[in-house]
Image (cartoon, rainbow, N blue to C red):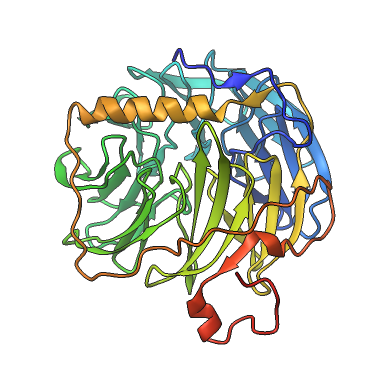
Length: 442
């Protein structure tokens, strides 16, 4: 990969951006990576830092937590193993930048890919078990079912390996892939997803994944094509399942709710910006998705909270892109932004509990270059496969379009703030009598 995402310029007054999703350790500690080269651990109750561990490159990938160890990949090419107190145990040199991919621990192996197109399997002491060479960068998080390991590459192929690293099959698409596959059995029971990483056994299964060619693909356990659903932009968001529906976000700025069997579109929700590799998170009542706005003149990011009909309940805005998947823990949603803050929002009170700012460093993520790279991949894909506008089987309102109030700078590392100026609520919730005792409506 020749594209360069890292600049030596720093914006004074902000911390380094966060592209990593958050993992929970020991039920009370949040762990994530940042572009200032650090892996952070915070107290989930108050946002105070427990420890930080420095690598020699930005930490874009999401760490893995397995027993008493944390595994994190860095753009310096190393996979780091540290304990729950942040003490260094070992590191493995992959000789290639470790970017979007999340590290996976499965069947006693540590699994990940790098930008040189190499997929690795290590033992828990950091020794190489085997490696597999794809044709281009690997930025997808692998999925595991039975003894099969499934992941995609920028070479436009989805690979299936056995647990010895031997290829069982490959499936060619029309574009690069950044998305983690979701796996179900034929009846729709979830076997693996980005938010559910417990290995299950099944003789027959289906693999669902998004692609830069605008497709949501379904293939079977042997790599045979089943069907494809088109959006109008690259799909780098991981598909998520609930009650027979597939939810996936697209760079065309829509979150789609699709019937698993007949591929009918229940609804689509319009966000403010693009949806990156943020995956939908589903609770009993709500669906959460993040977006980003990055161009030559503006930046921004939003966390959207929808009801199950695809209508906006509320939205929280930050000063820069949100591309990570939010974590919900103890009725609080945690997520990081390119503005350099990790946010904690109470779902019960709908208010900002605290935010943590990462450190000042000389190296930052050049997000505009990343977006231009994604647009280039999109154009390449369009030369192969045309896009198609899906028909909505039952029309639902698009997302709430009203702009939020302006961002108020706050560079306090710790502390509590209601952050009310960053929230916006729909008229639907006002009519239902929600939050009538609070100011801050738009």
